[in-house]
Length: 450
Image (cartoon, rainbow, N blue to C red; front, side, top):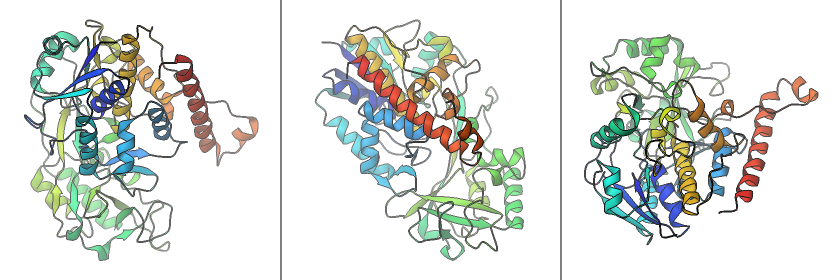
């Protein structure tokens, strides 16, 4: 039990792994380089920074994200605990004040006597582990791993197949919006000032002129040697527009359930979600973008109510790093070449905040079992965590994925349930969630290590 663990990266996966191990009396050396040099997507020097959005997705226990959160709570998630403390209203979703969330996480990590925080850049994890007398290594450096560490990973672990592209949505100053053209309403709920979402409705003419502008606007181009490989569930709004003029209207700009006046429903809607409890700024839901900054100002000010909009920060596109897990990792997320080195978080091929944090818990659990000299046990595929790991370890074509019920084995419905077409989908999700919770709880109890 004298083992020490080196964790590289203080993002969501890194802080979860560090906290999990420290709670079991394991010494952790946590190395983070953002206080030495921020990467292009980072804005603050505290830990667990949320870059793309402030939402950790659904809290509904009968949703896939809700099932994952239930499992994370069982494993003692620090991220979920601090997310609750810093939450902002977001309907059924768990959304946070980003700065407060990061501050709470950082304080918890830095106040932990079993976690030693070192601010430096790592280029050779094996050398750093030896320097700090660490027997196990967790690399949780996320999608924007530094060039020096990326070079080491490509040379020693992954080869050249090591990236995809992601985009970030802009955040607008609430005081700069013309609220007379907007209204508060949550989908399929009444119009009310206490709603969590602010909506900008568009007429048919406004929508098609906006989509045309998105298509024609100048975009940030990849370098000559790079291919744009985007995550399908988080496409830039301009790329959606290029795929078809109605594509955004059936995606992030869907008007269904957002009618302010049932007799005059909007043709499309831009939804805004609070960035903080004060409601002093909003992010544009689903508006990740490749547009150059001047073009973002021009095009987004075409949205009703945005004529004089001022943006706290504009959207951007960046290259993400991730491994072909099936090719280079074992099921405990250790590398086939270096069994003492494990990867966690988005770099393994999971996508999303909760998925990344959950991956950190999964890897820390596996490292702890190694420290206890226990044999590896595969998490049940009926659980959200087991399904995620199963996906990245068996998918023939590596592509980052959120947790969804499509990754989990289907449940059997009775004849009566199959006949109830209106509620069939909801029932399937509820049964899958109930089954997953039960199987995961029994699995953890049988393991008997936490």
